[in-house]
Image (cartoon, rainbow, N blue to C red):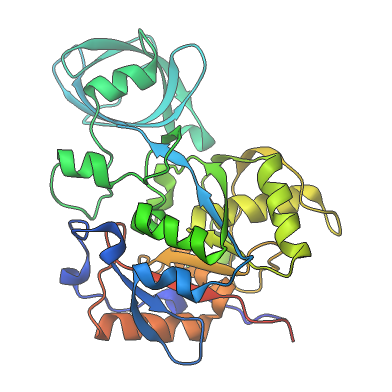
Length: 351
């Protein structure tokens, strides 16, 4: 039986000045903590291709961050801040709304002093979101009037730099309200070096939701309920994974969102069945003791104390190993969270 963990087991002391407020000058100039061995090794991210083997498969999340944050006001003049969580057919969205008094169904909200949105009612899990109808394509209106949805621990207003750097170089499918941050370190130079090394690449899509920042409020982590996110694992990626396995290569997930998509698809396939293409929602919660079926290694950034992502990386690499790596990262002044540095983790070989 795996050990039973409580929320406190995933806590660590983080000096506030280690929370990165801006990206590194160059994407691949970030630091990379190599945690695949018994002793942590400090590297630079552009060293990553040399740590992988020919025939390995890197899987990226190709979601594109939308300018999901809107500022507006109610007809009464009260300020409203919206964070669009999901774009739906028919010019409709689900959104988080923050206001002194929540707008009611049948009313309107004016955003950016440019367009009115109809309030259709509450929506989503536990009715925590608002169902809105925009007068035009939400993606067009957000691109024109929205703001980059920077995480709550980044304290500056969004800038043109954020618009460029809080986005991966291979972002394709719009829909995320938070970046798959481990992939922010990849640039054309690193991608070319990976190809020259014989490392293959594939992609999934998972539209990262604001729930990725949702705190865990229960000491017994088994009682926590995860947010739901839309994802797709396509046939070409499934085929690439099968070919990698057949050739003796390893599957390397770039980011926790990619890992969640792959392992969610594996669970839809059922015990003993091969990975199959899948499109749908996932609320998978990965904690120590989880039986990984797809991912062998993980490229990831450093995560918040007591977060579900700390639990996920501990499940992959081992709780003691991860906590030791985090102690090393703090002592070595690594930069944390979305604009911070990266680490490489490996799933221990089965006994």
